[in-house]
Image (cartoon, rainbow over all chains, first blue to last red; front, side, top):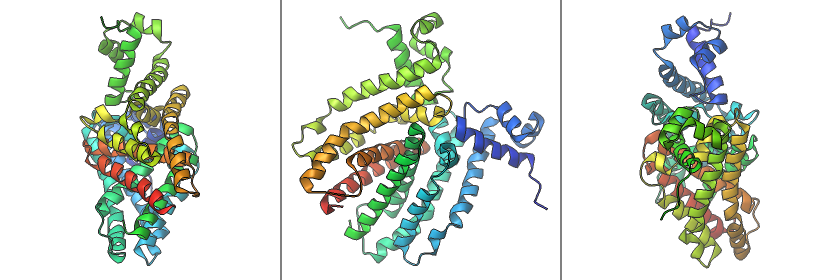
Length: 200
Length: 200
């Protein structure tokens, strides 16, 4: 038997789904309870407030996507640069389906409530930069292997990959298409390849 | 005497200010009227609805920033590649002050209401891609001058600059700082320089 989904998990799933479609502020507590099929009593049993759920949703998103990336095939490459390029290819491969299905919960939430919900901002920051951090070791290993001593750090390049992806999602939302966003992923890949081909 | 500011202009100014700080959905009609110092009657004299103002705000933003970029010094370079790199440097130079002062109105709005307000989505799309379009001629001239025949187009590189900038704003919002966003601008500049240095 599959493990029973708790009201907490149902609410977190509902938050991910609705906020990606409509934004954080537009998603009401009533919407979340209706989507999850739980009562308001159940909501307040698990969360102090909508912002409390928003913060938990960022952490939930981070854990769920963390597993997706941990199990992705790009880690299998022996060469560290191949792992970094494989990561970028993987990001392109999952830019598929409806725009709300491939865009980023935490990028959306932080865009909207960065000033008005500091705890959500911090949870989104930790998710974005924590994910970028998973790339640093491979980038540094590739830099060492290629003898790169550039003006930039492995960390700044890892952060740059996230900025490009977050911006690509904005182009996808603006055009209701993944076409422009996939072109951005191709440019990002080209940049990383050029950095290591040219030792800059 | 300075020209008199109309209620319409006051409401558009208020929209730019409040939406950049709090997002589109969180900014109410009451907030907009209070910030503009106009009555609801005045609001509905000029706009049919809040979404009508949102769409007009995207166009207003596009015109205002359009003037800023048109008058910026990067156009003065004789060499087209220098104009493109000068544009990127200019974008870095204006990532200054409070985060809400340098981030993008249309990137924020489209992130939030891309599904629920199609007219706002289209106005934001036109602003983002219209602005990208102002770079295409210089990029193409630089490609011609350097004999580049790459797999990518001038248009896709212009769009990529916008994705990087939009994503850099998300990092700025997540960190409440321009540090990570300026590092992204430096990587973008490095990419464009490498493309033309290596004819890729």
